[in-house]
Length: 392
Image 1: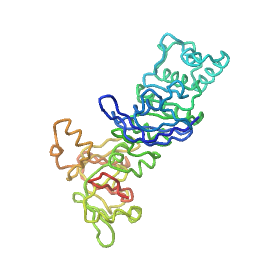
Image 2: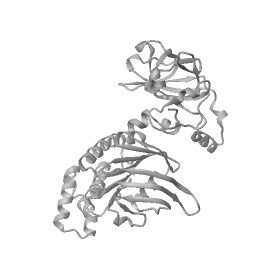
Image 3: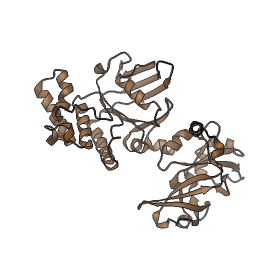
Image 4: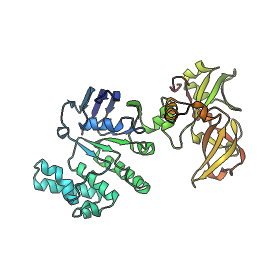
């Protein structure tokens, strides 16, 4: 096993297109690191640079104590698992898993031992004589994993390996990959665009946008302490509700006003964010996670907001209540770019902001109901509307 250290990594393609800018990331020995972000953010490019499949334009990359900038892929002692499995259709499962070892002229007994042990771990022993066309998608993915495992590499690199599987199998394979990593303890770098996958699998998650790592932290820290509006909006399902609000000092504490609602901020929340005081009398962006709402009848009516229900999604263990608020939608740089691509601007968004609340299904209202939702002000988030940075 080995650590992977990226220092000031940049990538510029021929023609001047920049894919990565000043990427600094230290992946610890045995860590499961997930790279997540929207399409085109540079996560797969970064993975391919670690593998040696893309040249490094700027910076230094180390695997263990060795600088690998100019070392070819075959000499980096890493194994890559691809989205499309990349199995040889004319070979059996055994031969697919053993192929790399045979190229290295490893003794036959050692090849047999490694393949059989990996097949046992992945529960594919009975499929060793079969060819890939006789396997399901999940079984093929296990074979691709087995081919990587038998090499006993210093690190695994995985590029959206579960994206071709159906939803149920994807959840199952996520769990199996987590158990496999706990058993092997091999350094793993995993790329996905699915933030739920990222949050459930990674020891740490690096959120990428436009070739830059916005934040790298544990899943819990990303969720509870996002550093900016992009991370706040990207991490979480349903996404964090964002609304423009006015912060004020009432004399006995801070209050925040949006639409017709005034919330008195939780004193502990305020004390943990000393930077908030400087924003008194100013407009900020308020972030409210869906679970920060609850039906007012369930926990009391203090600090509640009036809501007209526009949609209710009953999921059994929880319910999502959708409603709109008379407040101009928050417009981030990403939203502006999307609007520009469609030939539109902020004026097309209207003057209402859509919210989602996750509540106890026992208190779920009906479509069209006028209700009040309580807000747990200890769970609020605050952002500077000009810089998009979180206020702490």
